[in-house]
Amino acid sequence: MDLIESVQNNQVKEWKKLLTRKGRKKQSKYVIEGEHLVEEAIRAKAAIETILIREDKWSGYLDYDADRSVMISEEVSALLTDTVTDQGIFAVVHMKEEQQSITGNRPVLLLDKIQDPGNLGTLIRSADAAGFEGVIIGKGSVDLYNPKALRSAQGSHFHLPVIHDELLHWIEAFKKQGIEVYGTALDERAESYHEVSSKDAFALIVGNEGNGVDPEILKQTTKNLYIPIKGKAESLNVAIAASVLMFSLYK
Amino acid sequence: MDLIESVQNNQVKEWKKLLTRKGRKKQSKYVIEGEHLVEEAIRAKAAIETILIREDKWSGYLDYDADRSVMISEEVSALLTDTVTDQGIFAVVHMKEEQQSITGNRPVLLLDKIQDPGNLGTLIRSADAAGFEGVIIGKGSVDLYNPKALRSAQGSHFHLPVIHDELLHWIEAFKKQGIEVYGTALDERAESYHEVSSKDAFALIVGNEGNGVDPEILKQTTKNLYIPIKGKAESLNVAIAASVLMFSLYK
Image (cartoon, rainbow over all chains, first blue to last red; front, side, top):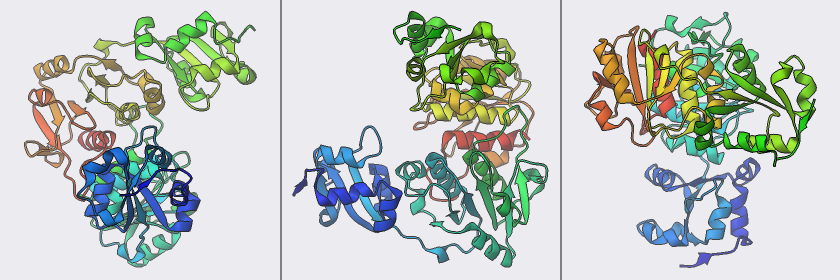
């Protein structure tokens, strides 16, 4: 087995670019790191291009498809991680976003300008656990393929469709199908979520950590909801708020 | 106004020690950073010893009590932050933990061996928002005064009592008062939380990110609950799971 040793290797340089949004967009690929995510990708039959294994870890993964596995040096492994301590196993995966895989037959989560990749990933993981059909990430959000977002999602993006698209387009389409679209807002124009009964199909929109959902989007919803705060906290973390709503509105 | 300029200053060295758990325990003080947290501490009449303001920020805080404010250099400010970019305003606060402030008259959240400071802080913020009476952090958890935990809690520890104590002692005391104690567990010995009706007083225990609540603790509860997972996610983030339960069980 050949070893890719140098951080100057051209292939390594191309992989390194996948740590940036621009590089991912250009190559239409992304990198996942860690045994858990790689195993999830294999199980989900994701379009894996290459599995990268640090030389000292090689013997632990002999059962992986040798044709698509390559051995990398410690230096290359350290270059490709976005964490302090790399896990020594990566996969380069082709992006696959199928818009038509989201039908609205089950609840869908819409994300408006989420800034924190940890929140984005946790939102996807929670939507998966809540049994949602899919997640739509709007413009101005951190993207799914951000390494920290992928880490927080813990492989859930292999379980349900997650796409990047224009939210207003989907809101319009859901409304045409007669599907309720719930925005979330903190002010009194919104209704307490306790007033809304559990449903089998709806769209739920949560927004930016500082500013919430864009007012232009809130105007297009069929209803806006809020979570009554009992204590003295000013607000809830967006992933927490979304999860309380997802589990309450879809039982 | 004197300026504390040198990172070699003895007072600065004592403050720096407050970034470690050992230093905090020894001095019985902790550091908060950022305007939001400092304002929360002032509003809550917390036992503030000193407010530290970076020299270029000084004029923005002239309305602060001058007797307890000191001006620090950029170097000192950079030394005292645990983030990449310091916010230029800190407060040194005396710890205050009043065990008797938790009575069990309203729901109480118990935390068993939480490892991630972001999770710990988010749990406290969510317990505050859900109207819980207090939070008890058991042995083996990251502590409240960890700078990242304080940041994630966003000042909620000034709103409700948060104490560090032995969980089994409290579980025993709650049961003696006839208060339900709910553990959380993933296996079938637990009951779906949908089967439990909303109550005005109970204790809820959530546990370690990898291992959940200690089995020895689960044996002492009056009931153990789980959140049914509908999708293919293996689990929920602990702060998400706790929040779904808190908002569902206390309405």
